[in-house]
Image (cartoon, rainbow over all chains, first blue to last red; front, side):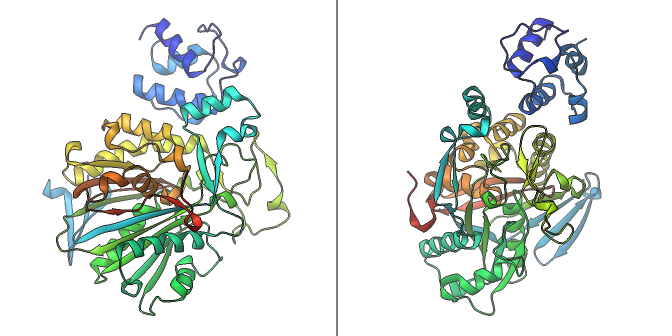
Length: 73
Length: 386
């Protein structure tokens, strides 16, 4: 998965039409709710075989943090 | 492989402790589920009529409908209890099977919402059922469990049959709508009220049934009711409404679920258990006719189906949308609600059942049914579902 595809998947998870970049802060997005956290957990496991806890998810600040968790940057 | 097994033969039950996997598994002979019924609360609720759960945000409501599968559920009247629903489920099943209630050797009642603090609902059922026709010789036993309750109850019934009983009535019933706070937006719109009845019998022709059961008490606070029993008795303090960071309102005497923790438990643990039960029963996916998972919600069921790679057409996933999350009756709701036409007179079928929930507790079994008598769900007092 390249960066563009990754951002597109994250937009889907966050149910947002806003243009996202690696610098976008998650807290500024309405879609960053409990359902998005669950969907992100599924996404990380299914695509990158990465397990995350709620504490780890809550510590994520930007899209780049998610990418680091996925191991793509 | 034999070195890994420490086998104890006790009559015809084999308890296997697989040291390598640290699992406790059981193979039980000569048991068969003969029939099953489901009775729902009498009031149908449809999420489209309740946008206030999502602050009247229709976009949010649509997202919940599309991802979680939230649609219809059935809520009991304030005076209708778990016992009432269970009595009706038992009555329609016993009539359909044409058996004499006096031949029931034991009643197991799985509930978290009993009629009395004590004794358990199996005794209330023993008193009331059929105007009191059950014999003194009928054993009565309660299990306090939620979504894993059907598998645990089936296991308990199977053990009783292997100790000499011939016929056990397994009842799973809850009215969690009375325990959840109506302003708990995370839980109230997904929980339904219902009861299921199942008859489990000694059957010499039955092939082996395999069970694996697991528990994790350390995660007890993921789904529980904090106050109102004896650890934290009911008081003015426990009746105070508290709003959490997501805007859900509840008191300490209400049902509480940490949705993320529970989802995470489901997502990481259930595929493991699924593979373990297949391994243990030496079955491949092709050997199993139906995979019936606890219908927590459609998103969870579909994720499990995808992760364990079973064909969606062999694994019901619509019961949550049709009836809500029915906790211990949820596996029966998928069987009676989605598979009744295929199972009635459908001959021998091998089925995998897997439940998971409060405790935390989870269990799976592989068993064979043969012309399972499967009664389609109906509402309390015999009302047909629209």
